[in-house]
Length: 201
Image (cartoon, rainbow, N blue to C red; front, side):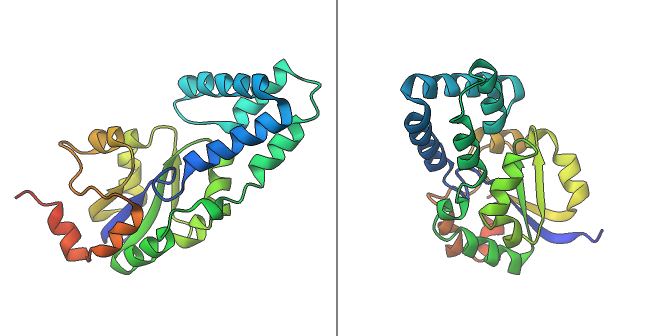
């Protein structure tokens, strides 16, 4: 595979897409369908599973929840809600414009943590899969897979766009080179300005 001049690696949740809003919508739906007590039980299972796996697994938590309430038919509405959720409506403003801009400078790649069913579904239904021409990598712990990222998408330089400081710190010390208030602010840069910001003074 040819080495690209620059590859842009984009996180999904709370970087390109407002996952906090997705979570709030799911909480509201759960409360409506199964009541506040069982809604809280679902989230307790979800947090336990996230601690075990190291990533969010909404469907896995629902499957585990089902073992506690095997005869609750309302679970089907919750799974349908998750699978058919309108993720495209939860993209942050200018997310697709930023990806289009970065594709003019180099290659844009989605680099995400997550499960192998729901996370790809989210990326596809949000329009992000098509926006990056199918260049999507999903790992359990993406910060531990940078050698594979480099093998899949070789480049002379990489730009990582992520909302989590722990990921940025794990990938590169010291702190992030450029901090943005929102994803759309990346449109205020040209490639030269962006790469110069990453060089030591």
